[in-house]
Structures are given as C-alpha cells and as structure tokens.
Length: 59
Image (cartoon, rainbow, N blue to C red; front, side, top):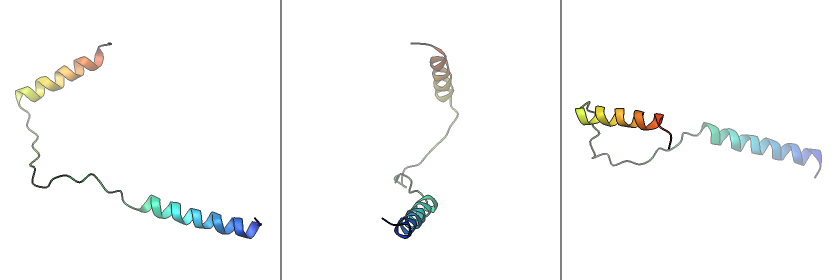
C-alpha cells in the first residue's frame, strides 16, 4: 500500500468517525401512553433513606 492509498483510507475513516460522533443517539423507545409520576410520598422517602443506608454498609 502506498502513501496515497493510506492517506485516502485515513481520510475516509476520519469522515466516518466524525459522522458517527455527530449523529444523535436514539434513546430507548418508551410507551408514550405510560404516565410518569414523581411524587414525594412517605414510602418514597423511606425507600431513599433505606438505599442510602444500604450503600454505606459493607456486605
């Protein structure tokens, strides 16, 4: 492989990498009919405290 062919391949690979990097990623497809709710009820607060405590423990 001569230098011209190698330079051409390098340019092609750079163009492919640049196109891939700028291409937006597709997120996971979620069901739009599902309602997402974020409520700060007592169970949620207790759950968060429990997980914080479990993270501190060593098993």
